[in-house]
Image (cartoon, rainbow, N blue to C red; front, side, top):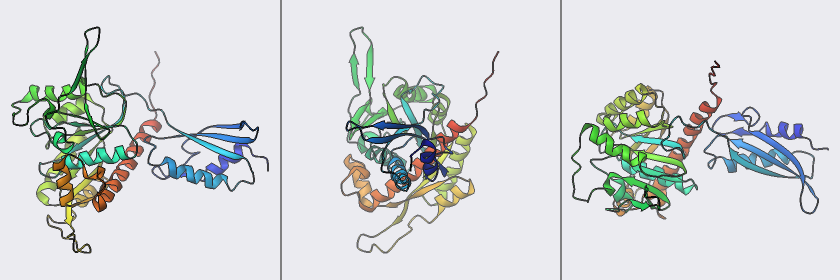
Length: 368
């Protein structure tokens, strides 16, 4: 059988993007099909496929499905599939221009483990090979310096020959980290209010050079105050993740966070329920719902928001937080690590859906 471009496209029309539930032809993902010869003058075909970013989580699966469909063609010609990311419309902002996806991790109230979840989201993204940064926006109670073992580390500041000063985030475990905690000693209080508070927060993303990143995770303070409004006004976010615990006192505040993000037109990518249940190490078949059950899922369903998953209460996670290395990055992450990876995989699905919506939405062009 003579292999043609049309036959290849027909074969690849059976390959479905698992996040977007559309085939590669519908997604206009097959950009080029080239019939070439290798150095031994053997024929082969080179197929260029563009996927909605981030692609690290789906490229291998789609590659395997493409190879499976191509193998059904009656031909001995080898194929080489090359993946790339579909170009996105640049943000209408001079800030963080090199960052592809900006995720705000928020909570309605304190004490729900939001900072621990944020650090582990950053860690899980990094494990897949993504370039990741995390910005600790909690001016009054910065946690990320402790969680990344960077207490009292100053920012890296350099002066160029022309007298310009350049400041860079710190880096640990391959993740860029910035925090108000790097500008205060451990026992120094941040006595700030109103515009000063927003100004200090803005400095972390306006004056630091973050460079090129696949993801920047904003660990926001609890509530719906000045920092949340500053972020949503200045930065075009990919979306927000809201962290809660199961009990009603936490879930009630989640509703306020949902209302705030919707009012400022920020997509809510999902809700994560932390400290959902406890499994005794000596009785792995048991689950104890210490703080109640199902609060996060119910508020997600009530507001038509994706529920990303439940994180169990585990002493290893607490020890990792205090010990300066998020549990997801530890060799003994165990069940906790698997749960967090699955949650982040669910989050990536929502991010890709969001990005596909931006690419596929028609734009209005006015000519004068």
